[in-house]
Image: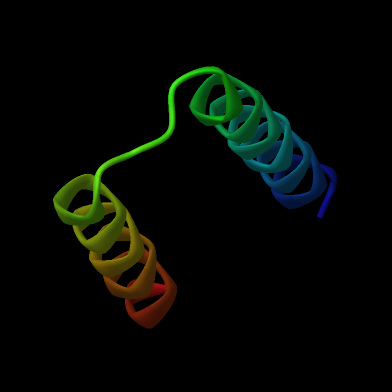
Length: 46
Protein backbone atom coordinates (compact mmCIF):
# COMPACT_ATOMS: atom_id res chain seq x y z
CA UNK A 1 0.00 0.00 0.00
CA UNK A 2 2.75 2.46 0.86
CA UNK A 3 4.45 1.65 -2.45
CA UNK A 4 1.28 2.64 -4.27
CA UNK A 5 0.98 5.86 -2.26
CA UNK A 6 4.61 6.70 -2.99
CA UNK A 7 4.08 6.06 -6.70
CA UNK A 8 0.96 8.23 -6.73
CA UNK A 9 2.74 11.04 -4.88
CA UNK A 10 5.64 10.99 -7.34
CA UNK A 11 3.25 10.97 -10.31
CA UNK A 12 1.41 14.01 -8.94
CA UNK A 13 4.69 15.84 -8.31
CA UNK A 14 5.85 15.10 -11.87
CA UNK A 15 2.53 16.34 -13.24
CA UNK A 16 2.81 19.57 -11.24
CA UNK A 17 6.35 20.14 -12.52
CA UNK A 18 5.16 19.56 -16.10
CA UNK A 19 2.31 22.03 -15.61
CA UNK A 20 4.74 24.63 -14.23
CA UNK A 21 7.04 24.12 -17.22
CA UNK A 22 4.17 24.35 -19.69
CA UNK A 23 3.10 27.65 -18.15
CA UNK A 24 6.48 29.06 -19.17
CA UNK A 25 6.09 27.95 -22.78
CA UNK A 26 2.50 27.18 -23.80
CA UNK A 27 1.97 24.02 -25.85
CA UNK A 28 0.75 24.23 -29.39
CA UNK A 29 -2.50 22.40 -30.11
CA UNK A 30 -0.81 19.27 -31.47
CA UNK A 31 1.34 18.87 -28.35
CA UNK A 32 -1.72 19.42 -26.18
CA UNK A 33 -3.69 16.76 -28.08
CA UNK A 34 -0.84 14.23 -27.83
CA UNK A 35 -0.43 14.97 -24.12
CA UNK A 36 -4.13 14.44 -23.46
CA UNK A 37 -4.15 11.23 -25.53
CA UNK A 38 -1.14 9.94 -23.60
CA UNK A 39 -2.86 10.66 -20.26
CA UNK A 40 -6.02 8.94 -21.49
CA UNK A 41 -4.08 5.83 -22.54
CA UNK A 42 -2.32 5.71 -19.17
CA UNK A 43 -5.61 6.05 -17.30
CA UNK A 44 -7.16 3.21 -19.31
CA UNK A 45 -4.25 0.89 -18.52
CA UNK A 46 -4.49 1.40 -14.75
